[in-house]
Image (cartoon, rainbow, N blue to C red; front, side, top):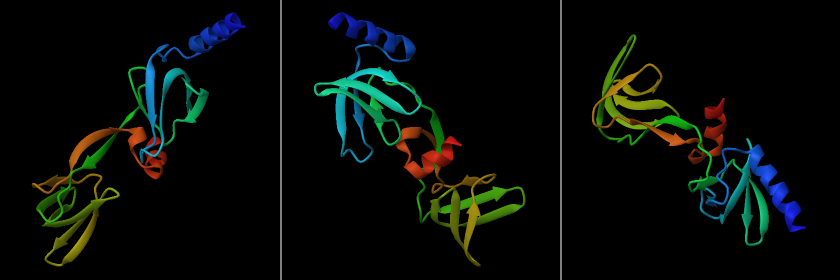
Length: 154
């Protein structure tokens, strides 16, 4: 019986070459409510399969953060972070020049208080200068909230 399990296990590893056999991983939900440690035995587009002390578990990749050297690499998504509302910004684009106090930056939209009132300006094509401007960064796809993951993956 043990021999058959080993042969079947080997076949599973051969079908998933990105998995490093025997390496332990730590799977965590974004809110840290769920945390499981085990040996990663397989992955596919949608799930992780790990061997744990309670048996083999298959968990969805969506909403799970994989930590450890055996984890498959995941795409990184460009995002804008660390905006500092309250500071002065200058926004320029093809036919736009606006200066004002940054009220917020969310959903890829600047909201700026100007002399004529608040303006909402979509970020694509806009250059922001000033200490309050958000900075470009990349984050792993799994670290984004589910709604943003779906839109970033398409």
